Image 1 (tube, rainbow, N blue to C red):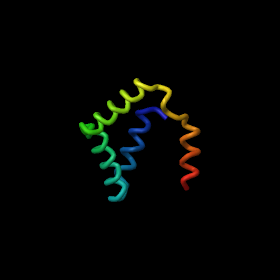
Image 2 (cartoon, rainbow, N blue to C red):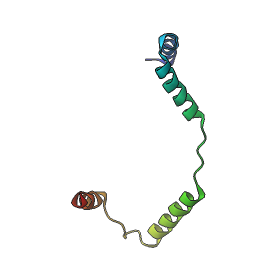
Image 3 (cartoon, helix red, strand yellow):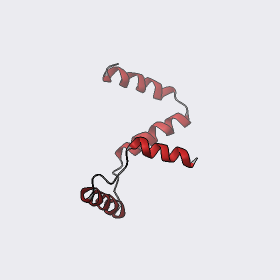
Image 4 (cartoon, rainbow, N blue to C red):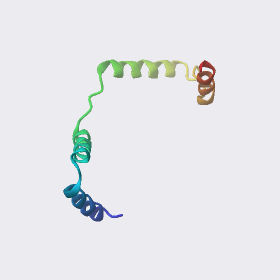
Length: 74
């Protein structure tokens, strides 16, 4: 479906949508416009993990092994 056609459908739908759906759509628009700030502590944590990896790239485990460990914990 082309963008123009989608817009036409949305415009027509908005005219008949109930309050709950209008609020949901509006919430999506507002969320799309928000700028997200990455907290400094999160940047520091990522930097620390990157440095650990660069010091010892073979120190991690494969994803399948990680999944297996998680399953055993259940």
